[in-house]
Image 1 (cartoon, rainbow, N blue to C red):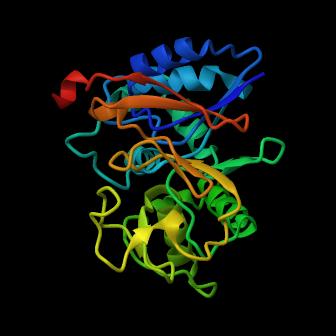
Image 2 (cartoon, helix red, strand yellow):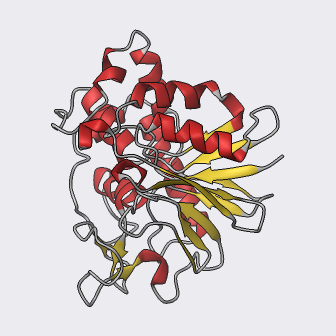
Amino acid sequence: MTTYAIGDIQGCYDSLRRLLDKLKFDPSRDQVWFAGDLINRGDKSLETLRFIISLNDSARSVLGNHECHFLAVARGHKKAHQMDTFSDILDAEDSAQLVNWLCHQPFFYEDSSLGYSMLHAGVPPQWSLSDTRQYARELEAVFQSDKIDNFLATMYSDQPDQWDDSLGTNDRLRFIINAFTRLRFCDADGRLNLIEKGNVGSQANHLMPWFDVPNRKTSHNNIVFGHWSSLGIHQANNVSCLDGGCLWGGSLAAMKLDGSSAIISVDCERPANLI
């Protein structure tokens, strides 16, 4: 059995199938982890989502910012953007089941036997792995309950940018979801910056990648994530970014979670809707 982690697919279904073929992935014996942003912006979001669901226990996935945005649109709390490409999911005959499946996916996944954890974007440096696990469960409980609509209606904000145990419910949940699905840079005190999106070195002087903050509490934990296509495939400080920018004509990458950290990738073509 081999376990792989794969970065952002964003509806690039054909690239995903080519990568799985290259891996000789066999769902009867192997497992694949998906680091979020399964859908949107690419031209085959519905096919991608249905395929991943069909893998059953051979696949593990976490929610990314594009899934959260989709759920806000699907449940009537946000209008779709011009570049969104998930109308095929909204119009599908099984749309309700697909939405329900997404609502029940985690924000954080870990396998202690493999020694790896996965999320979409990042972990604030002041959180331990135990903290991260706890806060993910808090957020997941909301997404899997009738409280989801109240939260989705107030989800879109960059504030608060600093963690505090005394934050009120929606502020607390908003910080948590921004960390899990949007974080790239923060300052030395763990204050989130959700504006900077470029590669390392393009940010303001007081900012740094979340995984480079001194005394980060998860510095000894192996974490895989996506979300950061301008960073690209990046392995350092026990973290692995697997977003190769497939959507933009880059690559779709898989990492073996067997201790070797080997990267296998396929080149991608930018979808026709983005040319």
